Length: 327
Ligand code: UDP
Figure 1 (cartoon, rainbow, N blue to C red):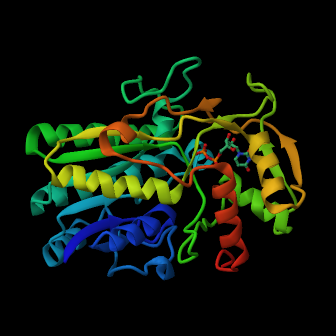
Figure 2 (cartoon, helix red, strand yellow):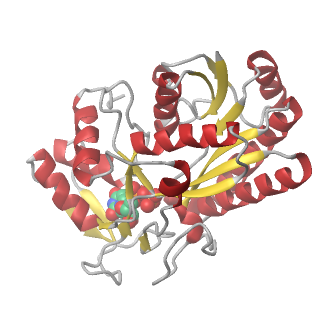
């Protein structure tokens, strides 16, 4: 069997990636320090608990499993926290990734799939965001991801490391079979917070800013179903296996929804009222982030099939109602 090292495999996106890797015939080896992940989300392959900055531990894991590739999801990812504690983001995300990249190269594991973010583009009013757009991060989270992209380019030039970099737009939804789902602690993302408010687990959703220069005054995002997103990762892995070389891909649908539109869809999917209140803007937020590229479709053959707001909200809602979400 072919091993793939999955950092952050106990987290939201990483655990879904492990599920599709296993279905595609790989063995996902999760490497996770459980700072934000959950041991019981590691269901599809071995689990090695460890920190990315622990180089000796990484070397041992590479030596024992001899993975053919790395999928690197492990990172801190909250915009608000990144504005308050930038050092945490620079240290964990950049130093951790550098340690991982050096360990991979030392072990001769030269195929690397990296989860980056559309937040690296920042606010670019009226600009179509494709992979060649300028990167102008607005917060330390996005800046740390941008820095890791640069490290990967340098390691290709010097060591021949090949990378597929995915710039995610907003990931949502859950495994429709309910084996894994989203549970951040604390939760900061729009859709799960909204479902919490609908269920009465928190008093109300706060809409961060209603005075933006958009049709209804709220921020616009491009939402992608987590199962579609992780499918792209398997295609990215095969792309590298086929020797097609390093490439950057946006992962978004090209369709944006405002916060108010997401609230409206949640109301109709769940058939329940959404308690919400209007609040101030959240520092570090871009007004509008929507992908303007079809490169993943045309080059990788990616075909997102579940990325409608209805499917994302209903899959997340089903997961919420299983009780797995409450920890
Ligand atoms: N948002 C909001 N209230 C919340 C959480 C998020 O209004 O409690 C907004 C946020 O300002 C952004 C959008 O919802 O415009 C998506 O935010 P999220 O944190 O889910 O993802 P991000 O865009 O930061 O990756």
